[in-house]
Length: 328
Image (tube, rainbow, N blue to C red; front, side):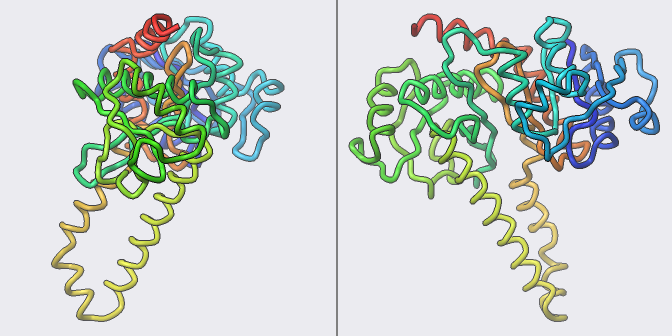
């Protein structure tokens, strides 16, 4: 398999991106990588590798750039060249830690949607208390959604959970303000009716307070709600760890206690570490487009590439395509 990588995207590019790529090349012996970016800036971190090709790009899409305009105007940007390689069939998938909006625009305008998919959805695997994780979508690709969109999200999320995460019959829940069938607004009520008859293991409504308790393997919602939930979880988790650290460092006694429970704290941190789960996937496109976290280190970027290899190996996009075709 062959991947296109945006070497200039993210807070820690190009160093951590390249290190993540080298880790992936060492791990996956059948993987080839085409790395797009400023060759001079990448040169200090590059190593000669028979399965690594470097393509120089004169432009970079910055995190502050307007997504659609930058994709249309910066034709020689690393992200744009990467997406074009996917569209041209030169590579099987692409990964970037850069501007999320620009990557979504590149996916839509260059890679293109699967026929029958009205709107792609952004999804990631959130850590859960039992360590299993839960796939949630949409996380912000579309602020507004129709019931039919949520149905498509559910089918795509279910296929991903089965093929990539190895869950034989993944459960699918609809995020709502209550578990009762009649709860919610017009969107969730109509979506509930569609999901009941869909070819998935739909278990009904799920409340947001149960997300991290692994209420379902796949959680479906609109992009506005999903993005709000995701950022709330990130903010609360960060605040809790900050408060805990402040308390444990507040006196000699608590510092001693902190040393005693350090292995336990490290285990908790690892369980909630996003870098273990890979990146966010833009579902509904003709090929895998993976968005690594903007602050990805080498380990996190490696995980995003690993996620992409599983999607390619298990033909996730083709399976979504054939399933949606049957539904239509």
